[in-house]
Length: 502
Image (cartoon, rainbow, N blue to C red; front, side, top):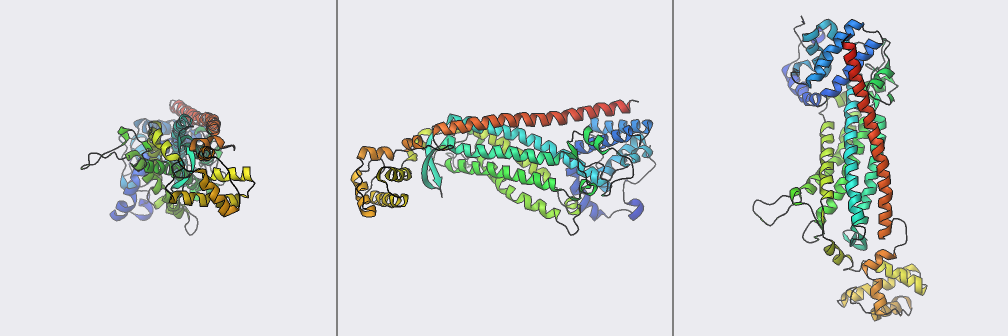
């Protein structure tokens, strides 16, 4: 049993802390430690296994230390003291172990290690697992997007720029702009994972250690791809992997927020293009007719807040002498960011997969306000050898006069275009009214597109197929990453239990 009465790391050097420091510094940090309980204990187990395997600890001492750590791990935090006056997880664990296996053994856990590399190692595990979960949900979202895009490759709707009718498109083609973005998000997540899944253990405080620790064994035990070579970098003084993860999450949140914003506007009665499923909506306490798209509101709100994530984290990484202290002493931002991202993804998956699309409403609006006139200008260039700018002027005058006369694209007369051709280009345009109305037809516009990636339904389906193949590759790669980490942790636990039993 422990004969040590205090639980303060600072007791010998500084004496007891004041209550105000405990209240304002230590207590606010406890929720972060609680959320990272598993990661801290895994890092401790890997370090203790390495100390035993390298002979830095005797087999007897290593077995006792690992036995105590396994008890901590198996408890899943139940009964862990979380004493605010004890500070960091390191001291919490040493005190807890000291009560069970004695201070002599508990105090050897920190051999060849500092809180700097310990904390950095735990954060890397936490963010690595977060990236795995975020990637899984992003893959589910991409599945839902591609499924809806393929289903609606021919669902005619207006395309918008400046929130004004621009050119006809399809709902499937519009969704594919987000499918392309989420494909890039998966690639960005993979890049962040590669820079995060590295081992910090062995960096110690900043200069490495005189103990002959095996840094690569520690990395292998935790399923890392490699080590952070520079000991100061590893020890937590250059945590740009955190900034990269936050940047990637912020971009993903922005893409989800943009999609949610589009659907939110189109959910209004004035548009009436889409509806969320009833279970994802709410109503008013006073207005019984309301169907408020709560899932979209939550996603777009979180997406808006995510715009401030990266500046907040980067500001804590740029202190005067490039230490890790600002980030260590600041409030925990990362946990909330990870939670928000997963929530937004889960809501997005459900919203997209169950979205109600009012195809007739979309189609009726598609060609209602002259959105096909760029195609008419192209046809004038093609058949009358006009420069495009001249054709643009002709069609612009034609549209102005038609609107003034109360005409729509469906009832416009050929003589209106003939008149505009004479006035603006001194050209005799002799299209028939039927040909003119066919050129201005929104669905004809879709099939007239000839370029790769255009709104032509065949191009949307081809793009969808391409991204479906890419998604299969993403799925396999992310499955491999998770298998690697799960297998390593399982092997670590087996090895720790075997050494503890000796």
